[in-house]
Length: 109
Image (cartoon, rainbow, N blue to C red; front, side, top):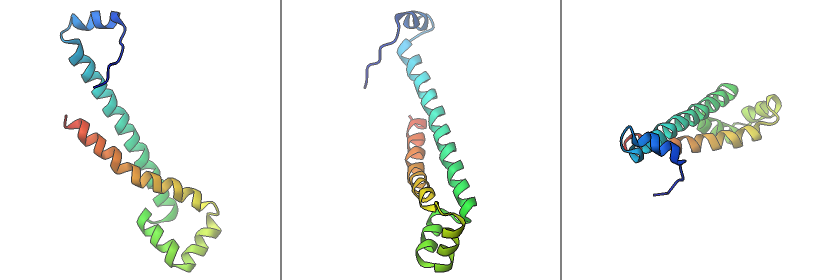
């Protein structure tokens, strides 16, 4: 557990409503869940945008770009900076399960 300094004026008010530690933990939990959901939404939006742009899910794109010469030539012509997209797309695809796991872990606590 980590100790966080909180201004005494907040502690004084919170203790008038009950256990300040429990209230602070609940507030932090809610805020953390809100931010995790925002991150998940952002990642899902980016992944969907890449899938729409390239017409395939990430795994399908990887397979085709490496095995289908016509597809690869088309992508190089239509999207010359596709490698930059691929780097971000890969990060998003691998990062999403991490955030989903965090959401599940904190939601269940």
